[in-house]
Length: 191
View 1: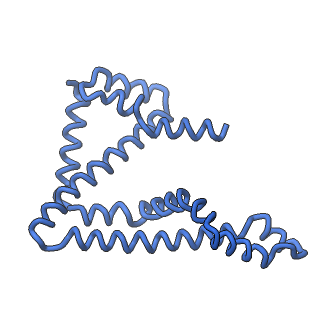
View 2 (view 1 turned 45 degrees about the vertical axis):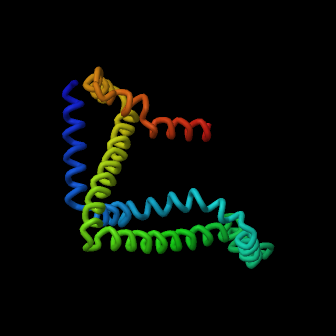
View 3 (view 1 turned 120 degrees about the vertical axis):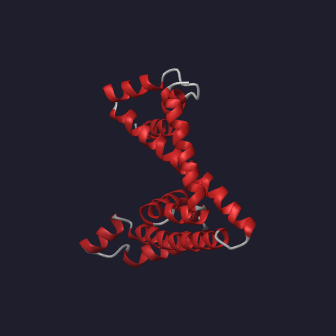
């Protein structure tokens, strides 16, 4: 084992212990409120928006909404048609609904996880450790993706420090980094 393996194990243990102390409810609340909550809601809207939009009554409603300004003369009405204001309104409403739904779900899960029952206290702590460990791993993957984007000597130095890892950290964070594959897939779609 190399130094990076010991640092990784120590960091993972520290993060898991912190999650154990904080608990699932508070960890979930932290990672689903503020900027994280907004990003989650945007991601959900992106994933589900097209599916929901193709449901019969939703597409009919959007067509009726577009007909309000569609076909009218004037720069303003042409601008509204060009920017597809009905789609903008749809995604704003969807975002607000997802935010409300997310807040209700997180509040309910937090209240359940933080109940005073002995078994729930243990489950709360166990899942808190697991959730914080998973989020720490995802953040670490993101940091290593940034290192890959920076490249140059920074990337080379980090790769060399991970070479020969017994935990295969060199593979996990560089060759097997799922973010690297996702970014490559998006580049292929755009190209």
